Image (cartoon, rainbow, N blue to C red):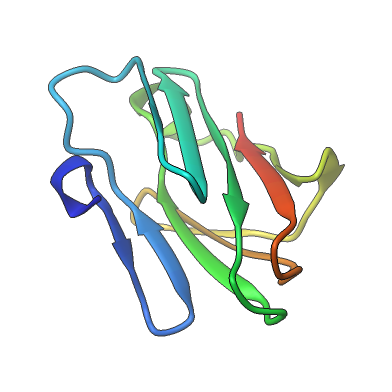
Length: 103
């Protein structure tokens, strides 16, 4: 997965796309990521019942002064933005798909 900019961290996932385009969709059995210049979203199926810390690079259209909206399973969630990376937490529900979005 690291070939497209997805890597595991001690507590979760880091998603910093390295594809030649900002519009893409990739899917693995436990992770799906879709992006455009104005949004990035996905789903994750954790193998454990522990929180999953997400570090996700903002698409070019979300970088700047405006604060992007981050949701988890359709509900707004707390997030911090540092150097173009959104940091937020997914609930850990082993074997269950959890969706997230930044726009």
